[in-house]
Image (cartoon, rainbow, N blue to C red; front, side, top):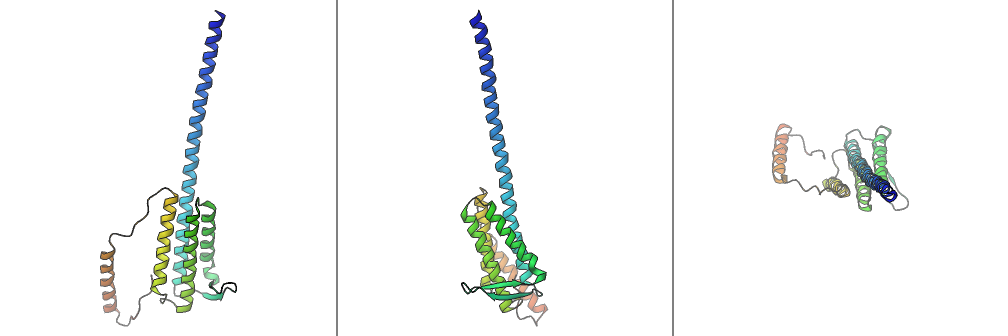
Length: 197
């Protein structure tokens, strides 16, 4: 009889211990999923913040009133944009967003694409200072958009998402653009060049 009492007590204790282990593991998994979700959302916000900061920087430097000087880096003879006081917040915002990507990205590929994107944005600013408002070479402008897409795709891979593909409507959009450009020239015959957008 004493053995039956002991076995009943031990069985109950083993059941409580086993149930506690299962509950603890379930709580650990739930906590890990929640932690992963929070980090994923933080990375998504960080990546979106860089794209937004680069777009704001580009909008400023392409504007007609942008104050940009060009300096030479003595180490590698690369030209560096010196942004005036009214646009410094855009430069600082882009640089801070890049640092945030460096802190949050899980892989080097995303950091490399962020670096290339911000580097091209700075070169667009130099081109704007050298060539003037509305005169940035189209290939440099296109390089910025391609660098943005490459960064977005790298960020999406880091987040476990599929790549964004080229617009399936590019032919239609070019046709609309051609019609709008003709209408613009007809409406304003003095326009000899279009601003880069």
